[in-house]
Structure formats: C-alpha cells, structure tokens
Length: 157
Picture (spheres, one colour):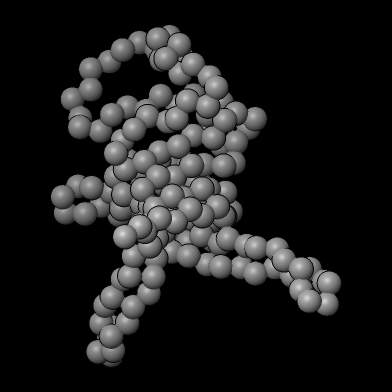
C-alpha cells in the first residue's frame, strides 16, 4: 500500500512545540491549502482545506524557530488516523498528516531550505553549501543533533 501526501499552504497558527519524555521534539501546526476553480456558471471560487500536521525531531525545532502564522510551507508526509476518547467518554477521531519533510517556501530571493526527520542536510538548490561551510570554523559537537549552518540569506523572513 502507498500512503503519501504533499501539501503546500500557509500556517493558520503559530507552531506549538513540545518535547516527549524521551527528549524528542514534536511540533503541531495547522495548514490551510486552497484550490481555485471555475464553477459551472463561469465564476471563480475558492475551496479551502484545513489540515493538522505533526512534525518531529529537528524538523519540529526548525519549524518552531523560523515559522509563524501565515508562513508558506511545503509538507511531504503520510496521512494518519488519530483516535481518542474525549472527556465525555465519546470516541473521537480525525485524519492528520505526519510530516516526513518540510520545505520553507517564504524566502528573500534564496532557494527554499528542506528539512526532514532523518536529519538530512538542506537540499542543494544550485548553490555550493560546502563552500559556505568551509568558511565557518569547525567546532566539536557532543550532541546527537547535528548543527545546521544557517546564514542570514537562508532565513525566510
């Protein structure tokens, strides 16, 4: 079976970042996507879809650091069904997206940066990031989380 979803939209609220007891980061975002279409009478209309998205690990931390309400992002992930029992004892469920990668679309003339749960470095979009990293002094990292070289030109706002 194949379960893959790609969404481009704007955040409907600021990022909600939490940490699991294991220390792993989890972020929840609301995403609004829209589709413009022509109705039978020839007039144009918009259809808006609101989707809850969960981000994990370093991707969640990056989202919390750089995204805010209104930010445009591309989310790639899978559809999941969340089920729970509410306070009145009723069974509840909803579909949401578990993001595997996130690409920030708002930028100041630079290429968008992509982050994923496997801690892969941002994708190379026509510029040589190794040359930029060579200019930076190397420091020893004792943490399991890799450093991401973010320069002012890479920040999307």
